[in-house]
Length: 242
Ligand code: NAP
Image (tube, rainbow, N blue to C red; front, side):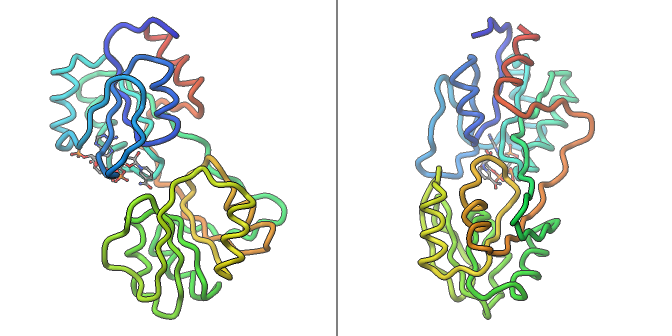
């Protein structure tokens, strides 16, 4: 473990953040969205900072020497706030983002820029839809009365919801065998996912079954931020600042 000077604020909520917290001393920050979060090792704080201003105050009060933003690739607001607050305070920032997925032979992917575009495309691809975009994304599909949805999320989604919906409460990791069985059992015709990266069991299963996938692209990163693709790279970046 590298010797670090100054405190490191780690913006978390991902597998990578938990792994990093197990390797270097950090204050992990969680948004507090899930009622039973998987807690990382070490110090943890929970809840929003109160926008950019609140984060600037926190960085100063807690004498933070570096920030690692290891939030989910779709947590674009938190990432924008981290970029603004660190730029205002001169605190170094690293964004840790696992690589996105790439299609290969046999994949039938439709890349779309955002959730409304996914919702516009889905009815033309199939009637029975597996939604794995997270509970806060389900509202984008609420008006699609012609489709039946299976939605998987960690917490129960809140309205507005599609009329024909079955909710599956589950948290990964998932296996290809399990995903194939799920897709078959529910006679799924189209899979919708965000390009989160990481475990790709659902994509492997969809390829095996020849199912189309609607892949929502990641929001862009703020300009000029340092990035790391792996936990090892983030550990090395922090060690350079130790
Ligand atoms: P978001 O839209 O980017 O952030 C909204 C607000 O939530 C932020 O402005 C901030 O509030 C607070 N927040 C977000 N992440 C935080 C953190 N790590 N620590 C403290 N405050 C945080 O975020 P989101 O998409 O709702 O995601 C919330 C959390 O769930 C993140 O930690 C993310 O890593 C995790 N997650 C998100 C997804 C996804 O698909 N979006 C998937 C899996 C996990 P203030 O402005 O008050 O500071």
